[in-house]
Amino acid sequence: MTKKIMVLLGTLALAGCATHASVERSLGAQASQSCAPIDEASVAALFARWNKSLQTGKPEVVVKNYAERSILLPTLSGVNRITAAEKEDYFAHFLTAQPQGTVTERQITLGCNMAVDSGLYTFHMGSSGKDVAARYTYTYQWNGQDWLIVSHHSSLLPVDK
Image (cartoon, rainbow, N blue to C red):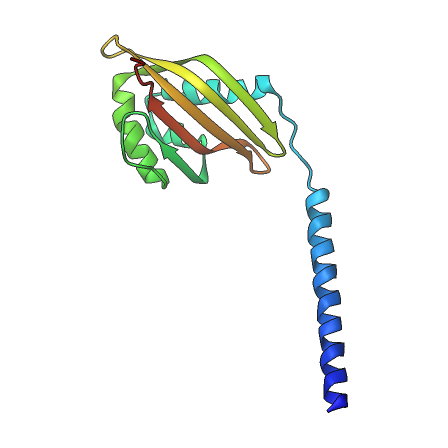
C-alpha cells in the first residue's frame, strides 16, 4: 500500500510540474507577443477606408474590411450579420441609398493588436438627400497583415425627449 501511495504522489508531483511549466510557457508566449503599432490617426483612417469602400457601391468591397470571424450589428436592420454573405446582403440594400458617412464625435481606445473607435456619425443618403444620425462602435483587430473589423455595431441615434 505504501508503494502505491508513493507512486501516486510521484505521479501527482510530476503532473504538477508539467502543468506549471506549461502555464509558464503560455504566459511567456503572451508576454513576448508583438503588438502592431497603431495610433488614433491610423484608427480614424480605418473608418475612412471603410467609408470609401461604401462609395464603390459594391457590397463585396465593403465586406473586405471585415475579418472572417466578425459580426455586423447594422444600423438599418435588426438582423445580426455573421457570415460574409450575410454582410453582403445587408450592404447590397444599404448601398442603394448611396450613403456617405461623417464622424461627428469619437473616442478611440488602443490596445495590443486591437483598437476600438466609438462615437456618433451621420450618413448623408445621396439617393434621398436625407441625413441619418447613428451611434457606432468599430472594433478592429490586427490579423498579422491588416487591421480588420471584428465587431461593428451601429444604431439609430435616439431622439431625447
